[in-house]
Length: 427
Image 1 (cartoon, one colour):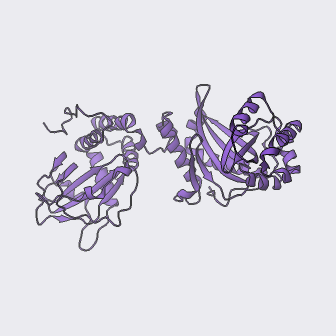
Image 2: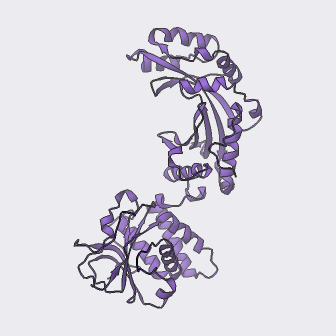
Image 3: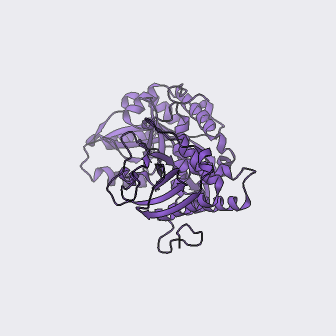
């Protein structure tokens, strides 16, 4: 029985197997004309032709008989033209990829045939890291000599396909049956391939950590003047995604998610003076947090010590205003401390109420420093700002989150009289 029969799934393959995704999508294209036309139009809009090649035409294909097949090994292809399509999770450069018949023994993920006019062979990869462009070449075996092979493959992204399917659900012309098919496919993707979602909304993430990370990554990109500049977005394991700033006083602006009292909270974090050099620049800027009083901002000292580029441990401090003033008055003390000088220096800071030398801190310092052969410590009297956004508020204002975040970043940078114009988009 044909694998694209709705009632004939792969019993021996897990739902997360890529063959199941292939089958599910081709079943949808077979049973939903709206989904099929949208797919063809998306492919057409991304097609690049050369020489005497004519672009595919949706109108011309409507008059043809359609047939769908999956996991076909070297099928007979005798249509006028053949087009190779890759569907994956990212846009890939195909400039060096020239589709041409090969001697390989091909097994196509999907084959859609439109009468005698066009055959589309489809390669489906949930993750672009597994793509081999040689799979886009049709097998010469059973390929008619007069079938013209389009030279350039088409690369389509799952996130755009899923966006389009979500849009179809709201069309007044769509039938109840088609709507159920599309909804079932989207639920299947949610369950088995959640990383393919477009992450245009927090509601799509369903508090899944991987999806939330991707949504946050997209949110931060949307704040940048050049959203395509990946170099300005970084990822810190355990801390999430951040924007790399051009300012010496603050290296990163983070957006993270965590569970607090059984509720999801997004937290915007600005981390000033995170390194010894950044701390010197920060306190020389004469920071002032008075405009944040009475707001939702949580401002607090972030004192820690480091060796080279590795942070070793942090210390608690109680009074933000005192802490800031102390370091503004003692910028010259922000320097590397040799091993023999560390105990005296930290005791002095504790006596000045700049940090709390608790029993726990003493034990951790002993483990991280005194029991090692580390020769010196970098002193990093950082200062951080946190702005929490509870889940209900984030969901309610999801469409406006990028504007809220940009506004709050500017508000936070104001403590050193900066406004983010060097990297933030002007909304």
